[in-house]
Amino acid sequence: MEKFRANVMLCAGTGCVASGTGKVREALQAELVKRGLQDEIKIVLTGCNGYCAEGPVLSVFPDEIFYQKVTVEEVPKLVEEHFLKGRPYEKLMFREPEKKTAIPLMKDIPFFKHQVLRVLRNKGLIDPEKIEEYIVRDGYQAMAKALTQMTQQDIIKVVKDSGLRGRGGAGFPTGLKWEFASKVQSDIKYMLCNGDEGDPGAFMDRSVMEADPHSVIEGMIIGAKAIGAHHGFIYVRAEYPLAVKRLQLAINQATEMGLLGKNILDTGFDFHLEIYLGAGAFVCGEETALMRSLEGKRGMPRPRPPFPAHKGLWDKPSVLNNVETLAQIAPIILHGSEWYRSLGTEKSSGTKVFALTGAVNNVGLVEVPMGIPLRTIIYDIGGGIRKGRKYKAVQLGGPSGGCIPEHLLDTPVTYEDIVATGAIVGSGGMVVMDDNTCMVGTARFFLEFTADESCGKCTPCRVGTKILLDMLTDITEGKGKEEDIETLQDLGRDIIASSLCGLGQTAPNPVLTTIRYFKEEYESHIRDKWCKAGVCRKLTTFWIDEKMCKGCGACLRACPSKAIIGEKKKPHKIIQEVCVHCRTCYEACKFKSIDILPAGADENTAAAFAAGKGTKEKGDA
Image (cartoon, rainbow, N blue to C red; front, top):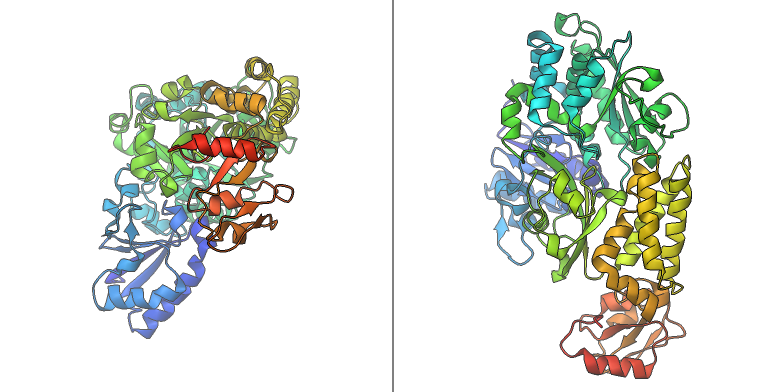
């Protein structure tokens, strides 16, 4: 048996691979050979570690020392310091933005220490391409228990009692869905996995499929036993090549070991599993549309009832769960429903995985108990807002979610509490925005996505989202009217009430929540022709305050249109006729000398603004 002094767990998830994991691995191998350490130090390629924005990342076990932003150039020094001299290499350690002290241990880093891992229990700890490493960490034990010791009713009862709700967005009780399908008499049933993750900024399911594919397969086998299915499909978007590769490898390995296919573990239970590649249509995240796509038809939802549990794929009883839901099943079966319910709340038990992105210091994949406040996720785990800026909102629930303002940051993350804010938990996308964000522009951005992704089957969604988008576009271009705000609200509510599927029923959420919490921005866009964030180009004039300008030249060098003139150490000036309103100068200025004024502002407007600005932050009215 191989014995190594240390294991280097090098992240090989999509994010780190894109950042250079392959080259770092080659450099590590070469350096270990050069130093004669190749028989003492083992390099293990893992799935996503979670701390995505700082990749490539690696951790050294058994010490649990964590290194980030590892480059080929730093590898020789890392090997020398850590493995030869026996002292962790501080230069690559985590440091909090406001503190300079290096934190060596992963468990002490704020991003990691506030998380509770159930779905991500194996992240950064195993090679996802080796089934043996999954088995060593209790892999397939729950499946063996379910197939040899439990009836269909036993499995369903445990899952129902756990309170597990579908993590794909709707939050429907998983055990109840399984129970419905189990009671239907049919010669063929299907167990399906939804890996068609389409939300902008979301990568929860992709990371699980890449880092722990066997956890998804094991959950599907248990679910298949519960409902009486012997055939299954994993529907994965084709844009996830690494996830597809590792899933297929895992299926092959499990089949070769008798853990999948015919007569699993000599129990007489058969389950055959295939991967189906989706073409990337957002609407195929909806279960009936996904099933039509699996049948080789255009992915379009159909009215319900009948529900898929009675009439689904090829009109046979079918259960569809998303990746995260299925990854929760094995530990629930292994440890019991009470163990699972020990985290979360009465109606929202267990944990939830979120893709934390946007204007936070720590971007990545996080798993937290349900019921945790939003503030804890954004500030304790996420490390607060980048560059010391102010929090403005968090878009929760993907493009169909809603924007939650600062005064609601203590809202617990439960299905009921988040819906009360106008947002949804959704599949787990969480995009944080700072005070440089235009909320009207944000609503337009997300609505443009959902309008484009509408399948067109029902009129409220097909036509209604387009009308909403056109109205928002007019507002951001200075063509808005006073009555538009009320019209947006009325139309948005009508679309929600009358659309056929979840896409249309949630598409207006970004519009309704931004009006609800940031109505003054809509009014400013319409009445004053002013985007105070400086994002909507036709409603913005950038002006240099000569009294504050130091003449450093940063804005002049950054301007792509050469619209700024001025001598060094003397106040600069923007030539308004040449300015393209790109905001680059505003971002480049370190002295807050550039003001954001209404469209068409002149010298008198600028002077009045500068005089009244006082101690306010730049860009404020």
